Length: 418
Image (cartoon, rainbow, N blue to C red; front, side, top):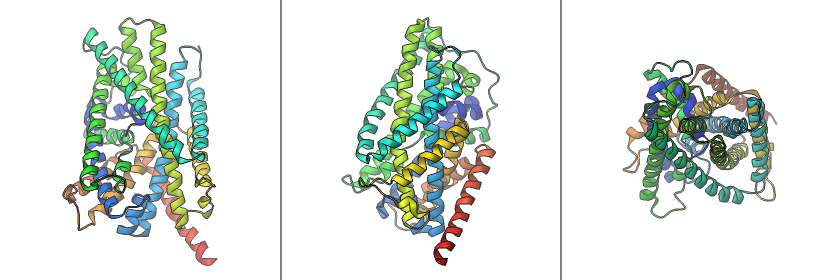
């Protein structure tokens, strides 16, 4: 459940929630739990790898299923761009200490492009590499996050409860609307729980073990995020935190500098955080690029997307979908910024899970751990958070969804005519 979001989402979220950041993190975590519960409920009924694309098709009809699949593909493509940009942003800030006059934007984009090209090559080599590498990378992320948290705690304990960095402008005035918008952005940092929800055929006693795994996993991540959010606010202050895209690295550097740590040691610490951010982003990207391409493959096989996306290599890798995904991600990296793609991602994925919750809500037979109230709360929460995002992102993603729906109409008409 840990990825690039924890390294990059705190700044943009604080720009909307201000000092109410912790409330936004908690709200995003609650909605993530509702979504995971609904997904587990549906996965038990429909043990398929297609996720909500299949669930919504079965429960709500073909158009709802297509909308879910299209929201997933478009939203997660933006997620991939955001994760690659995270690697680039952290690498650029760390490299600035060694390369005077470094152009942060150019460096960050260059690193992001290299990351996407490299990971696409890895995925084209087969899924087994993806699974093995992801486990090691997630473990490394945890070590780095706890090390940063410990360093910030020690810094605050030695210097008192005040921001180490000067305020950059003014923090936004906290408001319920700002918290909702921030929660929508923080939702980007809650990833991977759907994988747990769909493991019913791989574990013993899934009716008990899966809900427990979801609850324990999300609770752990939520507590970690709340801890980090509190430490970042205490170290940088809401205005400075809102102004940075590399929150963990900025806070660590400010804390170490105020504590009198030599510059050489600070550079080493920055390198460690960069490695951690890269591990989180690359670990998530390995699985994400594969997931996007396989969803596109499933949609193409059902004639919801162009047939060329069904091309599969001798290693059973959907190479056409992989390469198409890579091209789209590269375009987002070169044409947008990290704030924009996080908002794109959150909107698409929140609508995807809104359809999952709506699908679960239609089920009459349900386990005790998945009452209708959870499905309803998840549905309402996803819609509220999605439409609380910046209006430019909402409008753009609605246009993308409309293009997808129109494209399906045209594509189906061509198939019928032929």
